[in-house]
Image 1 (cartoon, helix red, strand yellow):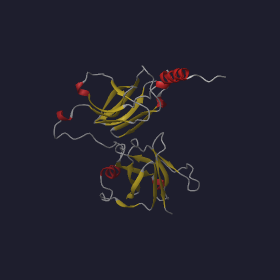
Image 2 (cartoon, one colour; image 1 turned 60 degrees about the horizontal axis):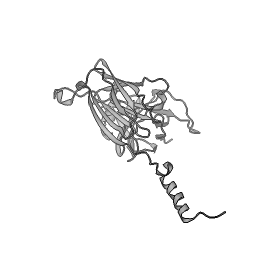
Image 3 (cartoon, rainbow, N blue to C red; image 1 turned 60 degrees about the vertical axis):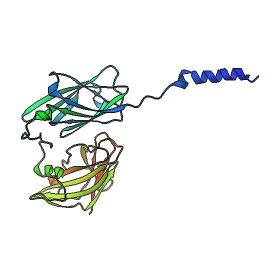
Image 4 (cartoon, helix red, strand yellow; image 1 turned 180 degrees about the horizontal axis):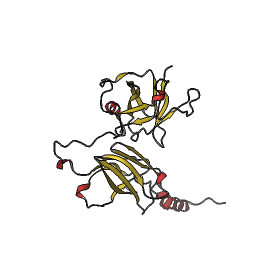
Length: 288
């Protein structure tokens, strides 16, 4: 078969260069934006829009404690990762949100004895995504200087846990004895700087200072899994609890408090503290 002449080759090359496949561009990276929403300046019942994208964690910060958050769209509840810690809510869709069909999110806040319901619309945007959203029920400038800040810790926390979350763990609280944990606390995806073993009567708490590496998404420990002492498989051992004041931002340190069940206080600790629906965790293993 005869080889194509030079003009024929030029036509073939031009068709390749100008074909739709050849000129298709990669999707434009979304610009991360930060919002400040003051609800008292908006009409009552307004549904506020949040722009979400996969692989980007949207951190919502409120000036009141978050009681719960719930997606109102049936069938898509597992499509968005949600974690609550004190006055923070983390959102991250596992896939692109349905185009042209906003998802409705309801957030319930606790302010004194009142419950405040807020409604948001979760949408996908081609060029922007919300990385941080500060939501204030009323502006700080409108508050009296003598008015106390809303409680930053969960109402169900005991005073010792609140102390460990808010103070330097090297300082002892009244009636609390704190020593360095005799064992290992090894992070996967996060780094553990120091671990303290604290006793208050029969209550035992482990306090961890954790670093979240630069470039990672915010880390929120949501659950504690007791492990078998032999093969590392999930075991049993009462109700373990983990508490944090807020998610640990990338490139920052944060504190984590693990409450040991009373019936396990004298037994060697071997647990995994981990985020929900994620692979980052801390393995805590006490020396025998």
